[in-house]
Length: 343
Image (cartoon, rainbow, N blue to C red; front, top):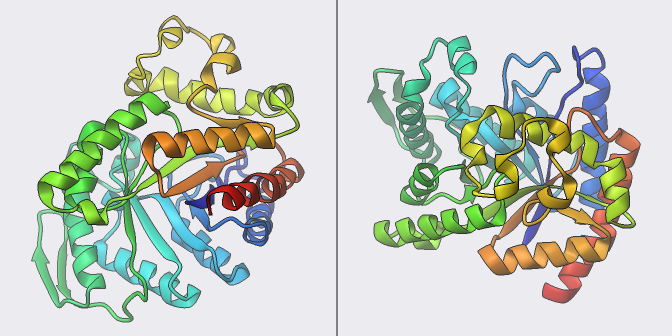
């Protein structure tokens, strides 16, 4: 199993120190490579006052310049918003510059104002996504492509071609995981749903792959929030307040995420009701190195993920120095021990 980090380039409230935040990410990316992580990942969002990553491929190009061997990926790149020729060319350039390290992890998007920014309608998200993904794959394969869609036109080919073209799909629903399987794409989970839900989606994903003859191309990337400390009490004290605010926003604002069927979530009405003791179980990778390692092994045994992407820091913290210590410790005391035990 490979290990990655998802960085969230945010500087609330108004991105006044966003350059410093990006410098933090470049430094953290170098450290992550040194201590044994296999990949560095960025998301995509738009219209966020804190500067949250409207152009992740540019960020990956910067990370390519300061690293030598780690994968460089998006999770997720919002494919509906972009012309497929530009996506194919930009991702291919990063792949060439980095020596074949690019992973284009794509999603369909879900936030109507972001679609509005690009003059699109969210109701077209699936059609936009599927049509553009198909064109990107054909362009990467070196084809001369001629397509006239209701959304875009393409006539020609791209050069240079990527050295090692890899495309993942993010999904957080039964239709989404089945779509990934039909396309024969590795699936990257969200960090919010618990293991019970992920397990059900994994079953649907693999069954769809069997039905469409794509099983040999399928794999699972599990995305999780987490933190390594001396013990669970330290994690709850120093890390949980920032993550609680982040998770509470999503669980309270987006109803489908409450579909975890977890009884303790149903009566929660405010952030203070959102308790670490319940929430971390089967969802977060937290605690001492021993506890983190046991959680990681249990998750792998349950869902057979091939990649685990960790996210340690969100907009509210912890600060850069603490994140650096966490990355170093996770690499030296969790990843190294995992590899000693499981290879």
